[in-house]
Picture 1 (tube, rainbow, N blue to C red):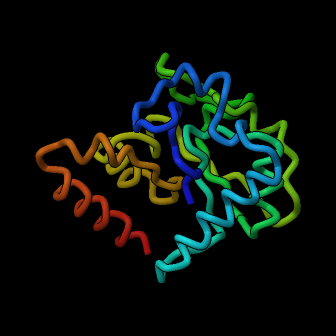
Picture 2 (picture 1 turned 135 degrees about the vertical axis):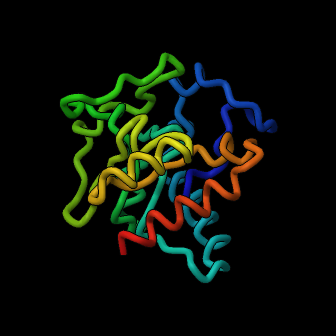
Picture 3 (picture 1 turned 120 degrees about the vertical axis):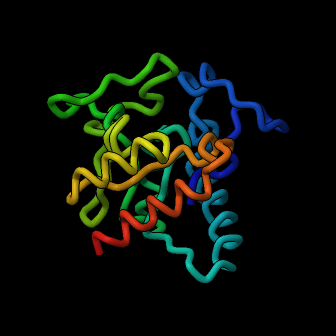
Length: 174
């Protein structure tokens, strides 16, 4: 699951990154509303044979304490994010462009129950456009999870071929 509506402005698909700095998607809900939104999304996604509750990707990597609690209560084991949300970024981490930043607080500040963990991508290495992620993963056999900007990738004329090539790289690691 990837959030509930991914919107910053109700009723539109416009995204205003400035709003995420002060009002992450899950921040607008009470704990009960978070649970209700989770249940609604879960009901819809259970119609898909390959859906799992094990993974959650917060929109814009933005979380709140109540959202982390809701995720854990509903069986999420892996909360996906990327290294910009770490107060202590890895040595040699690539700087994030000034298009926003850490919208949801520092991951080190969230206490997660046993069995729940944050899974990190590396900005501009395993998190980015398909071309760059493919290069990173082909050079780093152990690599981290791949996080793609599929929306922007899909606007490239050759995106289908780029994704086939990435699939071949990933398959060769299995």
